Image (cartoon, rainbow, N blue to C red):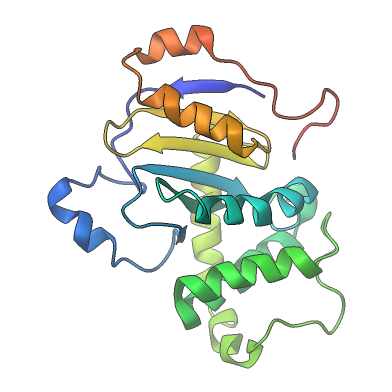
Length: 223
């Protein structure tokens, strides 16, 4: 439960760092990984989350509201269904992806909020017979391999970064490429402090020696 600066990142997504010349084009991109917040935000907060995780359930809706009040930062979702919550966690992740495919970013984030409102959590999933609004439009997508392929790819990316707990956050300054990893449900004021750290002139090695933050009370670890 600490901040650990990474080396300067080369990517806003999982590939290459966007240049100023293609910022306008990037703002029109719709699809996984999904973003919530201003397309012109300087900072991206990448959230690795499980839709059956009780810590994510209490953290994500307020985080989304906080993002809406801070136009300098946007949220990027990365699925990380934990084995202890399967198969419900992956099934709900696929449901969210299909909602996004059918209705775009607004539908995606609306479905994320809806799932956290109604899921029983800890791998129990939604109550029997409960479906999201307009679920009929999602049948064809859910019957395909597309949504689960997206979920698996994102989960594999998390594993390759050594991420095994949810929520985990990766805060990135898209102007400089500097970034910080944060574990646990980090509150808004601490996120603002982390953003300030990334715009200082301190090299990452110095930040590593000076930044440490407990994310949750001892003995109550996120998962």
